[in-house]
Amino acid sequence: MTLTHRLPDGTLPPGEHHIAVLSELFTEFPATTTRRQALNAALDQFVEVVRRLALGTNIVIDGSYLTGKAEPQDVDLGLLSSGANETMTLQRLQLEGVNLTMLEVFVETTPPAFERWIAFFSTDRSGQARGVVLLTV
Image (cartoon, rainbow, N blue to C red):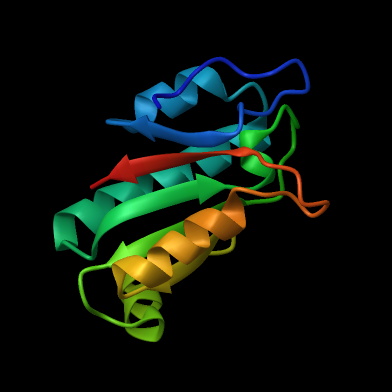
């Protein structure tokens, strides 16, 4: 499933929405506030560093960022690592200047563990299915 237009409540339809580039996400969730602009910049830098340093292969994006909220707190991200554990990956991201206060990053080293994060992100706190965005890096 590719990224589709949001539902009336500002969320994505349930399921996995695959994107090839972040601009698809930024089009669907535009930076209409200073907070969203900052989150977009942090997310863009995160993806650039992950790609440049080959830190991972897949990213799942979720959280209040994927809603109609004008002021989401952060962007929730799951990263399928290229092999380094969460501590090492987060340290490397920090060394590269990635703003981890705006990004909640969870790192998994195996596809089954990453799939569990996708499943976790695919439901809200009340157990209702929701959409997540997947980006292959």
